Image 1: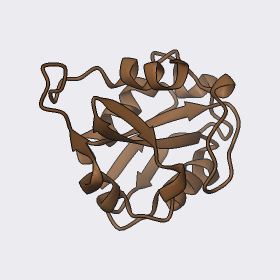
Image 2 (image 1 turned 90 degrees about the horizontal axis):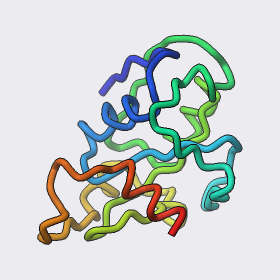
Image 3 (image 1 turned 30 degrees about the vertical axis):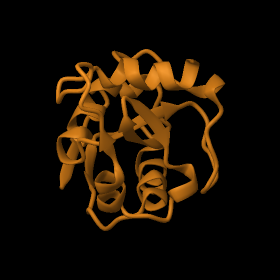
Image 4 (image 1 turned 180 degrees about the horizontal axis):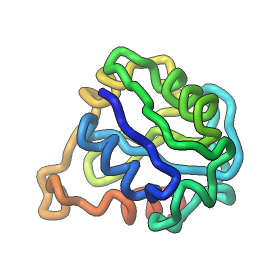
Length: 140
């Protein structure tokens, strides 16, 4: 899959584009990087989902990012950082909650997406507000 990234694109728009390919995974954005198998400190989480990437991005430019299902979480996070200066953390849907994939950064995106479990409760549907769910997970 290829996602065209523009600096006027918002965090929410990039999250939506990614979730179209991996519906049980999500991206959270941070102002600081993290190491492989490490969590990102919540104090660096961007919670303004309508924030344009140009306001958070380290290497301002438009471009394409190619993501493969067999790419590991660690590789994806590194790719976003190297190509665009974006510090991301991948989250996986577990029931009604989102969990960090930090301890499984060595697994592929496809494997992570398949590992996800989707709750059958009324709050779980393809139209779940991923932004609120992620913020709720990080901020309690």
